[in-house]
Amino acid sequence: MKYLFIIVTLLSISLNQKTDKLNGRYNYLIEDNNSYVQRDKITFNDSVFVFDSKYMPKGKISYGNIILLENFINTDLIISISKDQIKKDTIPFYMHDKQSSAANYLDEVVGKGKLIRIK
Image (tube, rainbow, N blue to C red; front, side, top):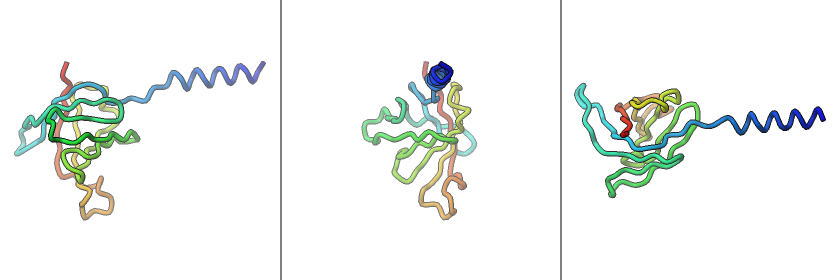
């Protein structure tokens, strides 16, 4: 009986924990000369994202300590988002180049921007 109680408790805890994921539609803005310029709209759905522009490829989202958007505009550009930001309506992000000369390309920021939720 004791073990049954422990199993039920562990199952209920694991079912109640949700992984925060990006969902919804956002405008994305890129910082250019200390001002933000709107580029396009993006739709996030769990682990993929799609630009409204039909010429842009689908991208993949990796969830971890930092959320990474891969295949953003081109295959060498990676976007990083702090995990604690994804519940907000305005999400700052940083751009990284996979072809960077740094040992870890996430250490070198090549640009930044914001995602603004469309309600």
